[in-house]
Length: 422
Image 1: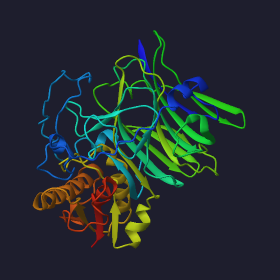
Image 2 (image 1 turned 90 degrees about the horizontal axis):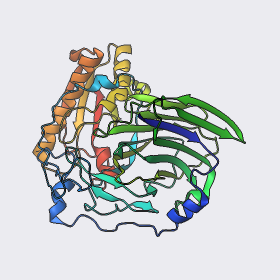
Image 3 (image 1 turned 135 degrees about the vertical axis):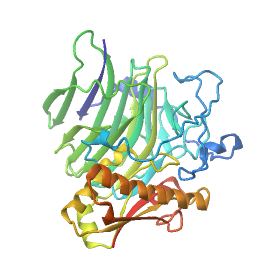
Image 4 (image 1 turned 45 degrees about the vertical axis):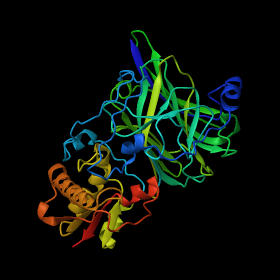
């Protein structure tokens, strides 16, 4: 019986041999410099906040869910509300305060390697039948680095969606928080001693139970533990949401609502991380990995203090489905934190205000922002028992930006929810 094995290793050794590294990483770095200028792809490049936009449903021919040569539009309506919030009831992840990196692959052409990335191999932007938006498909062994920043602070969060190992066999996928010797040459052979490696593997274990091994090595002293998470990664049809949270030395990793690792001393105090690296170490025929909706945010949120001492508090941790007021379940941690403050302070009343980026129709964005604010109010009332009379709602659409609307990260910052004391 095939089992999915999750392994989180904190290593001072390489997980590729030098021979493998030489073959993989001596390839020329590929960076696409083209921007979207092809009308055939323009429908997939519209803003997430344009309710009139329908994403293309173009299917990559080698996708397991596709028919070669097909071009099917996904017209499935997206329900509004927060019906799926409870599925994340154990989720305590709270994103950083300011988005500094965001990638939905909307600014590149289908079939191209995305601009603003570095690689030792190759990958391409695709769409997937029945899945919203665009994805980066990794089918060859190598490393893939989003160039969001070259200095990762002590407090940051990193999130992405993953369709892992399609088909679920022979997959070998890693995410590394790294301190590279040369940021322009992402080679594992040049890694300094400070890094955290999360490894998502598949293995055939016969009739036995799949075992997860974690290992922490410091000064040649090794501590190991075993844990099994076979059910979190074995759904080849639905993406999982991966969340990584660094707070100084402490590192946590979540798969969907499950907190898989919480390592108090995962990083050395002197760690100066400068890269987050995706890597594929082994690829069996037809194995594919898709990553999407990548989001880097910095700063440690201080919800309680800011809601009580400031007249306005801004959060980027409440997320919505594309073109919809439906709240994504990974917003649970942020909503719960807000609800706790409201419960502890029964006299506190707030106005909930939605905001969008500037893409799309002004009137449509205004309407969407109002509906999103109403969804937040409904969720706080229904899921957390907050009295509706303590909450008002409004929406400003795109009229009050806090960042420029000329980059994916800037647009992500403008898509926000504000809580104003009344």
